[in-house]
Amino acid sequence: MPTLVISIDGAVIKEVQLTKERTTLGRRPYNDIVIDNLAVSGEHAVLTMANGLVTIEDLRSTNGTHVNGNAIERCTLKNGDLLDVGRYKIRFLDDEADKPSRRQGLTATLKTMAATAGETRGLGSKLSSPSGFGEVSSFSSTLQGGPALPTQRRATIRMLTGGLAGQEVALYKVVTTLGKPGVAIASITQKPHGFVLTHIEGESTALKLNGQNVGPLPVPLLHGDMVELAGTQMQFVVGE
Figure 1 (tube, rainbow, N blue to C red):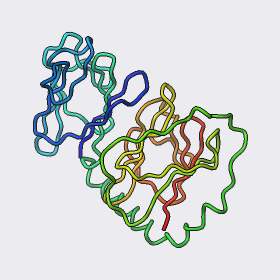
Figure 2 (cartoon, rainbow, N blue to C red):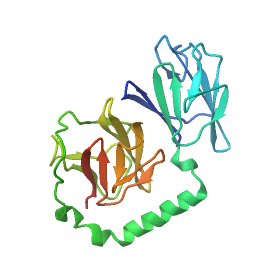
Figure 3 (tube, rainbow, N blue to C red):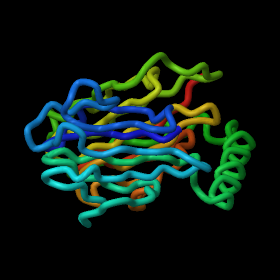
């Protein structure tokens, strides 16, 4: 389902799922998405959903609407697009709208995960905490979203370095947001088919999965995957 992740000054303040054909955004209280800030017009923009696509249209706002740094009047959004509305940044996420080839690749990956679950179950005991990383004692995790989705197995993030080394963050919400405001923010979303990792804010190289930059698109997480966010290393673990 299409989701808007709204942030200001690097801190995520709201996540909104688009469930209506027409969703209005603005400062006035009658909007579907209300952003109470003078930089945002009373009726700033409208998002419409049709034929699996989400389109945003600027409603002649005072400060304009920008997508990926470009001022727009009307624009069809793609997964990972970054919107600027006043001082606010809004990340558009819609991994369900990816190309069929990507969905097929994800299905194949999940089949591989199921086939190799027995081999990877003991991976956590073989890993040691890397050295040479500075303290990140202010690294924090915040939880966003509604009730947890039903899953067959429990998942956690195991902190390997920094001030929280040795601790675990349970992934029991629909969306778990990890990061340090102003540095880097990522989210882990619980889908019916498993968990996906998404880069929300920060430098493009701030989030890595198994040593590779994640990029703007959500990627599936497998048991034992190594995640690095702003220099803090952690491991995705699926329990029994």
